Amino acid sequence: MLQAQLFFDRDELVETQSQEEFIMQFLIKHKIIGATVIRADSGFGPSQLMKRPDLLFSFDEIPMIILFIDEEEKVRNVLTKLRPLINKCLIITKQVEKW
Image 1: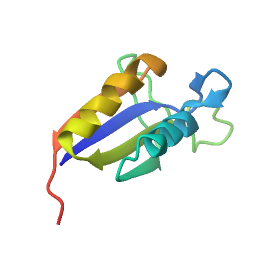
Image 2: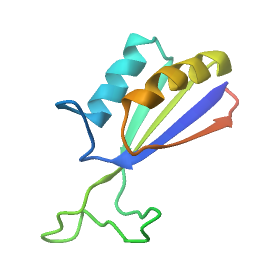
Image 3: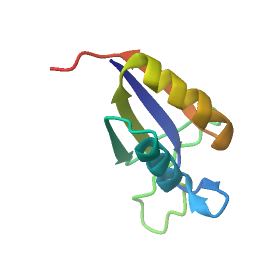
Image 4: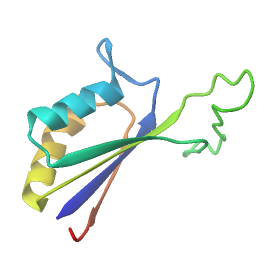
């Protein structure tokens, strides 16, 4: 089994749809076994600027992570199709065991 982790900011769009919704619908369409969306409390990227959307009057982008898992070939195939469609997204994969 292979797990993919997609890191991006919640304000990213794919056309008029939120990137989060677009990715989840894409994964459903491609019959991925399962996926989870995580909204982070804080985070930073290459800019080294901390994003803390929970602070009072903060307008920072909310850091998001989508995790999904399936057979390795299927995950790699979906990522190959998905990557050109999404914006500013770091993708990490790792081998996992299903218990």
